[in-house]
Length: 451
Image 1 (cartoon, one colour):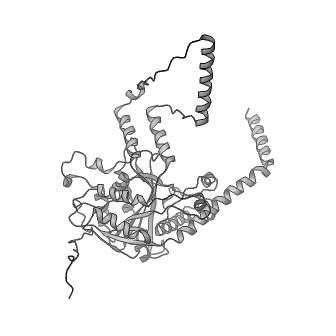
Image 2 (cartoon, rainbow, N blue to C red):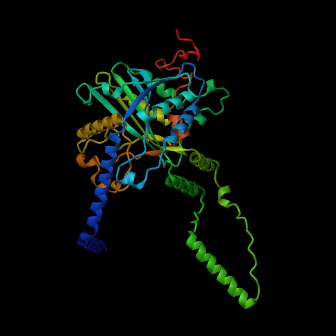
Image 3 (cartoon, helix red, strand yellow):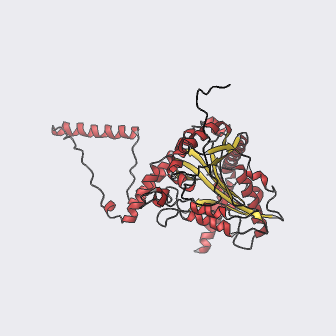
């Protein structure tokens, strides 16, 4: 039986190979098209003019992460539709934002990287929710470290973060942290643990955390989320007939009615609309299963972004401590739940390889170089479903080809999830090195005489 199977496979393979003149041109066309899209998009992104803004929140900020949700809602207005020509020939892509939390030797900073043309609107959205904050243009902190890290003096550890389940399932968000609290001062701020870790760094150590977010209006994702919900409740998906199908069915029914009337002389009775009973399986769901279904529905109800979370810990070798990287990963664990979703490091981008074979040291060195370059560029991966099919065959075997493959696929967060992982800390966060504005600079009164 096994020998017969081998013969069949060999024969089938030989037959397919003999038809190379049919499938090879198509394969090359698809490959070249994808490479062209990659080239044109990179060229388009390189012509973008970026600016880095530093935000200093006020000292007495009686606000919760909800205010940041409003900021993300306002920035979603920058979404625009890209037509076929712009997407496939000019390489146009949707612009994105980078919200960053950085510790430079224990000194914490909040940054927003945006296109220069969006600066006024970004500042307006932040001031609308935090009127006593200060915003000013800053130099890019990534340029003040050696550009050849890792080297004999510096080392780094970094990774992209991914979700533990499908992005139709939400993570744990800030309303859960405020549950059963009567006043804001009693609430748990999700950013408190991260701020404490960042404040403990010594001179020569740095942590960079960036949350890249691109506004999207994606019907495909909404359909996927609806399919996940239907699967959870066991509902069969009924395909809606097309207009042509409806016309054909209507014509057939009308012909049937006329034929019945001709032979019997009776008019067909009008069909009454019958309400479909509630499926029994919905009532059989456990409370935890109902909570999951409700969570999926609530996530789909708010506007959303494609999101990438990336962080680096770097420092001089004499003070380098990988435990800080573990602490950053642990900070994101607080957004995880066993029955819904969570955040974890992406093993394909992590700068640590667990096994010692297959050129471990050289591959770790390559990963460190790559993630540092991606962080500096605020690289937002544009997922290619075509190239993903070739990735398993060449995955990290040839680094020169590996640059074409994406290790991280952006996931979808709604604005509530984004506000949970990135917001400005309230006054209940007591990390000693948090930047605070002591007093708001007021504008001079209108009509003041000028001598």
